[in-house]
Length: 411
Ligand SMILES: Cc1cc2nc3c(=O)[nH]c(=O)nc-3n(C[C@H](O)[C@H](O)[C@H](O)COP(=O)(O)OP(=O)(O)OC[C@H]3O[C@@H](n4cnc5c(N)ncnc54)[C@H](O)[C@@H]3O)c2cc1C
Image (cartoon, rainbow, N blue to C red; front, side, top):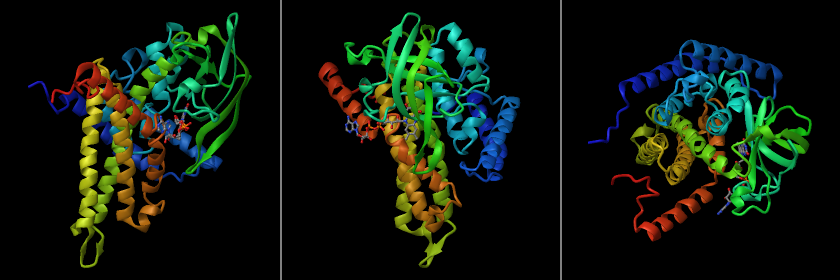
């Protein structure tokens, strides 16, 4: 049989190594921190803690698992990275400690895939070495982010440079970023409309790139910024992936980046479920422990069933990416399922914890806030469902089979 649900011993050893690092180094460092992002002293402590954790990760051979060795990474493919990311996301700072956090992680893949040698040296290498940070600027307040063919930020070529004007928002990590990958319209008449956009590497800060504000979200400010772009000049050599390829680049970037989110969410789902089970075995009411009550057992079993499916989906989608197969529909299925499993499981865990779950004494409240955006960022649930349905119908019409959108699972 070709199917083997165990990791090779070396990957299992790496997973265990990352788990130990998260439990023994990252979690205790986090516990000692008082996190108040509005307070400059708290921010300074957070940065200093991340810096310290990064040094320890580098010394321990845990740095940059997803990048090739020539860029200082550990060279693991998506399947092994799935295990590592799930372990690291059991803590808040884990992904930052190992330099595998959004949006840098997705930008690294994009630069590796599309960058020229010069762009890789100037932008990818400092990112990999932890000397730079980056952001990805696509969404605009005026038009639906779900449909990038509507992008209004306009780039016009003048000789060897492009003049860009527009408006972006929710650009994660924009403050403090050394560069942005900016998606702008270079040909509004292009046919197909997917060829309208191009990607530019913008060095930041730059004249014409104005960070208006850190958008206040339901969980406070997290460096998701609004940006005005006024007569920004970008040299032609900073086009990433060729003129008109912005949509393709977004798709290539977003597939693995979406899956990387799912990998991290697995760690959060498992943490929430463990907390739910643990609490239910310790809380007593109406003559028995909560764990003895069917109403609570159903919450546990529903979460277990959904997490089990989520893990299988993540591994299969990672396998498809790693083997160069068409991963688009399986990644959409996975993104929808894992995001919604995260939302439901954290909500159930809060229910089982009662007032404690609603408090900030446990990580559940913050996890629920993150779970809320997971259902529309990087592709809203409805858009993924639309793509899953149209691909399924097309496959049936074209091949008389649903195997293609199912990632050709041999069942
Ligand atoms: C925490 C966070 C971080 C983010 N980071 C970044 C970033 O770094 N860079 C960046 O460029 N963007 C970022 N975004 C923006 C994110 O990618 C967008 O929110 C997302 O693409 C959706 O776009 P929108 O918000 O404009 O919603 P819209 O496109 O307006 O969609 C709103 C709703 O309309 C419905 N809808 C849309 N299309 C359909 C359809 N075809 N059928 C049925 N219903 C539909 C869905 O319910 C959807 O949720 C971030 C967002 C958040 C919350």
